Amino acid sequence: MKIHQQLTDEAILRELGGRLAGARLERNLTQAALAEQAGLSKRTVERLEAGAVATQLSGFLRVCRVLGLVEHFEMLIPEPVASPMAQLQRQGRRRQRAAGKKATPGTAKEWTWGKST
Image 1: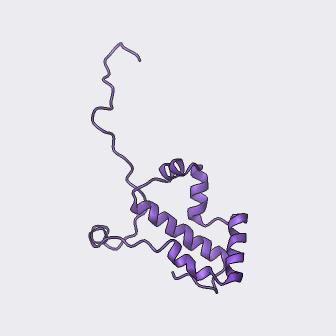
Image 2: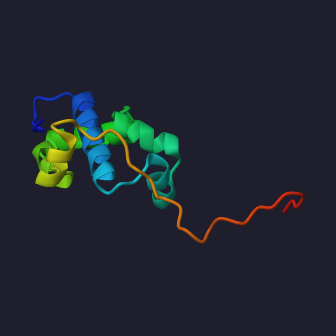
Image 3: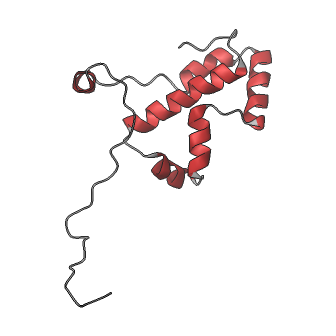
């Protein structure tokens, strides 16, 4: 969806949240991993991606609307575009979750009967 002046604050927040989620998934990050790297709670990331209305951000949007800057959000977080190979693999479906990191082979501890660590 293109962001334009006639959209409500809630619609813009939802669109930006969806774009944030898309950007996160393209980088194969879980919400928890993104939250940790950003120094936020996972719930905060969930609310941002859902476009939940935050007082400060809503105020920011209102000021930008008055100044005629809302259209510039289009450049701030562009719509994520999957590579042609990723589009073929997904067969037109939208990506829903990140794969997470796989355990590296040498990090598992050896376990034996009768010993507790």
